[in-house]
Length: 229
Image (tube, rainbow, N blue to C red; front, side):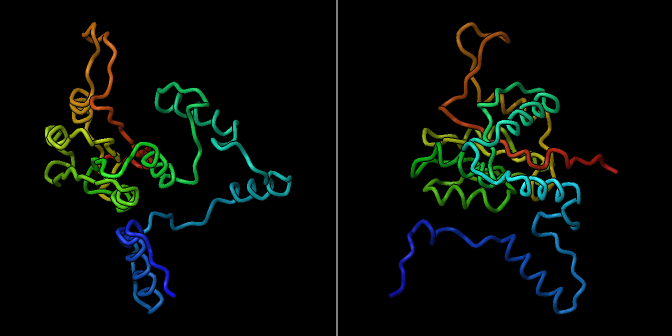
């Protein structure tokens, strides 16, 4: 008897990235000269010092369950990184460690989405964003951007697409797959459009997001910024 899969699972598209990766590897195995630009992984092995540290940790018995939010020392190191590199102040209990960016984003979406809720997605986008939203019963809504504009979307188009069911906006800068970095001007316009100031106004007034929206900022490529030639 065949198992009937759920509508949710059937609605998820195959990963285009992995499909291209498989095709490139098959072509390479067949003897063709292929430059594979699909899967986001380096062309070198994990550095030896990292491998040695992982081996030493296992040999010392560091193989047990850890707190759900992550190893305390690691969370404190992340807090220090955010303070030093990004000028952001967080307490360790505001940090959660995951197995990767995909799990982090999925859990964030799972925490806020109900069936039918909408998520604005900066396009072109990493293929997993829309599928994660759909797998949770949400509706991905694209924010198209053009090469001629440096792939910076129109903030007015963001505002027009917001409805009472809009729960989040996913930003990815530097962007996968374009590599584009959102200009400071666009980010400033976005802040002005998505946040309102409480009574008291002015620059000193506190700000809160409209319509209970969340901004999910995927900054996995923050160190991969290259100056134009």
